Length: 265
Image (spheres, helix red, strand yellow):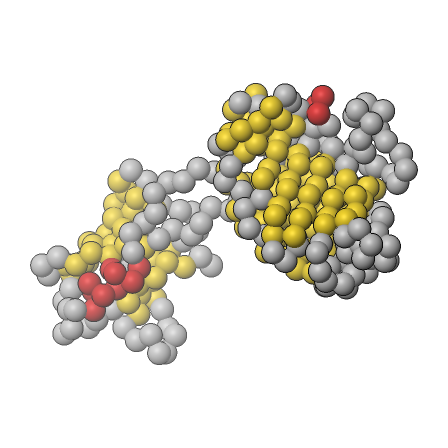
């Protein structure tokens, strides 16, 4: 019998992650009116990113909060697929158009900015906002027109600047000014809770026994196999004990080496 396998498994699987703040995914889908010199290959864009439902406020001003912790921002427009860095995100109150503003300095894009007029996307206060799930209509803007309630500015617009590229790989490129401020004609902002991450399985070997721990998560079951090459797994029938939302199971190390996994049907 090889007992060295169990500590190796424990190292590979790692310890269960600590509880984290709830994350939400924000998806902005819209149609814009391109104002550059060249025709754009598409008038549709999608921008997605995640952040805490109660994000940390790291700045702001009158009617605006700058929030931290934006991650996984991705911008798609025709053939352009850009994974962004760490954009600056503003949440706005109703007097400042509502919705949000996002600005990105990026090597590939140079500059990408959106001002999205919409309903307020949060509850609470700007000093301590809580993002609210839902789908919100973007306030439409039109070329040559301004929204009378928003200090002479377009209600929603996309501002792009590029120092190099072409209108296919960089669909907003203006070869004359390298800048376009494009009114957003329609679209939505959707906020939805991120699915919780799958539970992590931790394994610790002691004298003659092995202890498995994993966060109690609905629909996940513990399975085992003695051979990873055959792809055949069976359910572990021993019942774990529940301690502070963590399943704990102690098994004997007698018999052949075994591998364990958590699986969701």
